[in-house]
Image (cartoon, rainbow, N blue to C red; front, side):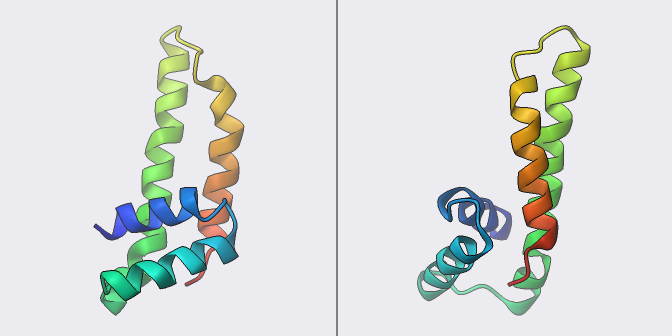
Length: 86
């Protein structure tokens, strides 16, 4: 559940650290998260984004380059997730 909350924060927070914090603050008022979940949330988010990023290149290597245009977006999202502290 924490991975979903952090991914939603990334997408619905406008792709900014401040937006993510606002989303997570609101989320925690409705569904409290344990300190351990908060501590691991960014790591789960990074892992999820890395899986999606790898998917883009696996598809590209098999001749399907429809998703290559999204690679740059995922690079930026991974960088944001790596820098995010909550």
